[in-house]
Length: 134
Image 1 (cartoon, rainbow, N blue to C red):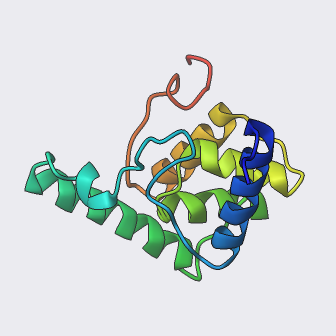
Image 2 (image 1 turned 180 degrees about the horizontal axis):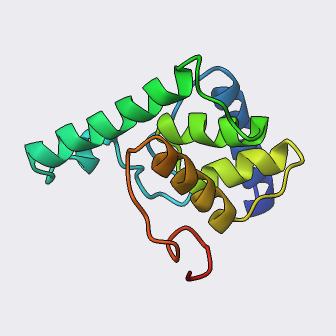
């Protein structure tokens, strides 16, 4: 049986959906590109940078899970939790949109920076935090 292009794409998408529902994570994208694995991402990174990145995410996770930590809203807590898990800003933005919450990339970035400053993890200038110059 020969399928035309639309029928093939429909069948392929149905199968990919079944695979996703069962927890299968394909390393190949639909357009044929390969997704980069975490080991490939760090292949050319020096050991110091790897350790610093691990420490950064560990510090974020500890701050988020600390009982004394207070968030401005549950959305801020969600943003910081997903960021501490390594999710990209565009992924967080899409997840919030699926929950019916609209946030621009810049707003998510500024939220992350606000809590990084509050917890003493990083320092940003007023401009980098989206604030007017004093």
